[in-house]
Length: 228
Length: 228
DNA sequence: CGATGGTATGACAGAATTGTGACAGCAGTA
DNA sequence: TACTGCTGTCACAATTCTGTCATACCATCG
Image (cartoon, rainbow over all chains, first blue to last red; front, top):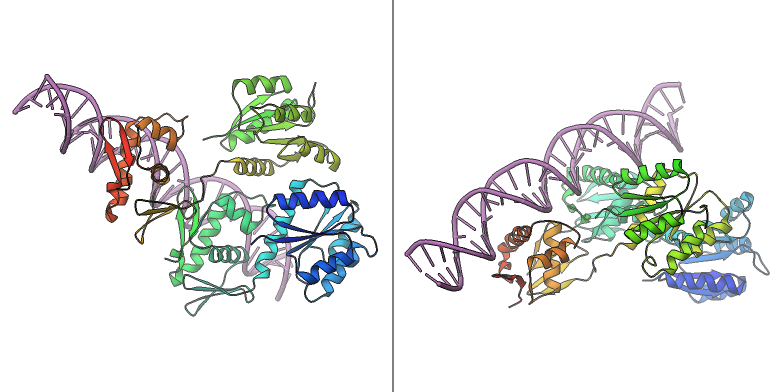
């Protein structure tokens, strides 16, 4: 399922550059040149992320962001603000208006895509507040709780995200760096061995209910959550 | 296995710092102090990654990056730019000149190494994740597992690569040196008899499911994976 | 049949990888 | 301030993997 990104940008040159990079990375790009165009697209289909220029003809980007946050349907869609200003004051205002991240022009395509991925990933668990069940465990993101055959298990934030990722991606081996990217976020720099420690803490928490065997070590490759 | 990193940096102090961190992380560091020195090293042996200072005596780092991208041999070698400037404009130029990433001085060794690992990981030729089926076996690189008629088999790294190679090249005899080149890599130096041992270990792992007969010895020539 | 060259197997030490306990920094809180 | 829970890192222990032997085994050929 490729994410659909709505790009709201009045300058055709930048619009094209953004769309090119986005599609290049495997996402779909929908283009809008002003606030009205953006709403037209939004009414047609809700995007997974909105890339929004600060300066827009008519109503400004910040104003559009506010309206997006006010609307029931678009309240939870992540927004990345695109601005030429480097003033910190603007940054604050952009974020306070509801943006999840912001990028200053000129931007590097790599940085842009990194932020897009980061935001999409950050939002991903929030988007699916649904209870996940795998291997006899039941994980409820909304309640931040694990149910192991009636026994409730408490986990720290990192262990919770780790288990949530594993349960939503079972039977597949993930390397330490992949887990860092997926669970920690690829903008964070920590040692790969940190993963080992959190794997251990997770196993330790699952041990009393004998569910620790679900998390398997694949020597030389990484870890795997297996329901078998 | 250890990646060779060419460090092009004119300031001896920083050069030393970089080399220290790189070797500390298990990579090999080759040092060059200017563009000419860089080419000398490159002509001698192609590095796996180039760490390039923006400011270099003679021709600038960006210029060197351009020439590296223009050269057939070095076109695909990832480059990380090292710059003291925090100007966004420079950052763009650096990336557009063909750099894969950039770091601004002063940098933290941790971030430097994280970026190096990230770039190397991106460039690393990854084994196709496609599941291979042959002779009744099903091998899944993503799960790092073998499915033998419902029975799951776990293999060590070498045996796994060996079986993967056999299953993707069935019905054909491979000599020990060919297998060493294909499975171990053509730069490793190990005894040919080592292949025998790993063949045995692979057969041993497949024995409980009677799939060990798929791997046949061809006396005087080598081994063959036969689906019959 | 015995000799010969090639292959299978079991053992083993060193290397590589992972598990584990401890600790210090940090943010939030009473 | 002291306390608490969480995190990342480290050093060291435990485990698994690897390459190399020495030896046993086997097919082929004179």
